[in-house]
Image (cartoon, helix red, strand yellow):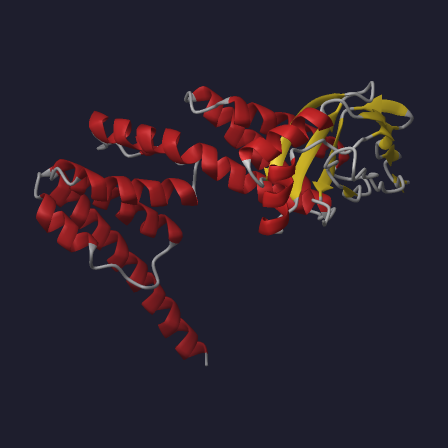
Length: 296
């Protein structure tokens, strides 16, 4: 058995050495402007390659495609690499030409905002479930938001996410507030009353969630209500509540229709709460609210 283990170990070392030689050969071909030959060499991948080797092969494939004028293909590879690692620094490759650095920068600016929103949705779900990794996921979203700011890819939507990330981070170790379901007010003929959840407290960190003082349902035009009923899709928002219990911002996390969403956001900005507390001191927090369209 020991002999077999030694043979397997040696085979693994040989395999890694072969990978290194193959990638090194491709690099040399790229450096000598033999781009087609370099692409052919890079296509000879090994199924047991390390993640780093897979990434490097993809990067040099993109380099060769740029050199050959096949920019669309290079952008596709760049997008795949940056989705896998948004913080990837292409400057780590000494032979990355300025136009390659520019291409990766442009792709990063394009893919980063939607990627951050995807990462936030996952982090938010973990925070709402009080998962152990919620803080680390929220921290990663914060890092990506910082990067977006640095490279000029930030916008008003990402600024809203920054507030949400900070709010969820404050409460990530606390008992998760339940979403309060409310129904939009279709008009005088069909009034609605919001249903609220009772406050919960985490003894370990002594954090209490915000308590509803005033949360009247939004007034939505009949045509939009009809649309929401037909879609059977509730609106969902995250309400950012400050230390005074007033609403600083509202972010739509599940959209029904732009006009419908606008009516919901306008109503939510006027809501009032008893603020969340940490050790008895009011703190900023986030409350998730689901807006259900009433039946006819």
